[in-house]
Image (cartoon, rainbow, N blue to C red; front, side):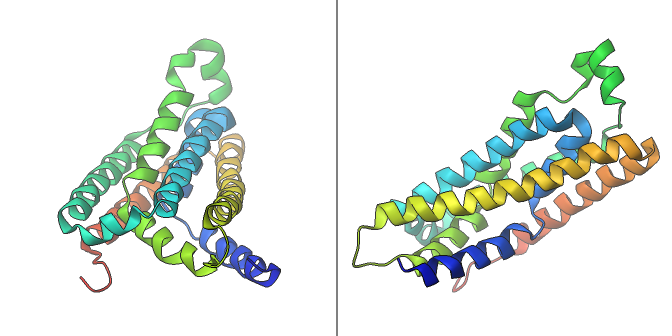
Length: 211
């Protein structure tokens, strides 16, 4: 892999990472509901999910999903259902005073484990992401040299950029808790919920190229 290729990949990865997606919206919502600690665990779950999908592509298993209509539709249905459910949870959630809640009743704050599992599930239940990686990553891999180290490098770069962007979304959520009213926070949560439903609808009607 040449330096020019890597720089092009960096630019493309930044452009992709800053596009709002379910993990980004979830990072912001986690920041509002559980503070930076819960959001960081959620980011860890999303990053682990991305690493798994990239490993699947590197092992050549992405072609299995591309070839199996039944498997693709099953994963898509699960992803749509989960995004809708998360949207309902976000819409119904009530903003709380994080400092007061931590001091009085920590159980009222979003648990790091819950944030981790939610984000991991969102990352793994979207077949579009796997097919995207399967189409995107090989374009930057040189076939005449060992491919596994190249996939490791590309995966690390993408996850690093994606993590930084998610941290920005999470920080925005935690700052919103400090400066905005409960009504404003509720509107942000409901905006994230609407975003989840829109992404679920997009995934529900999306068709693979050539399908």
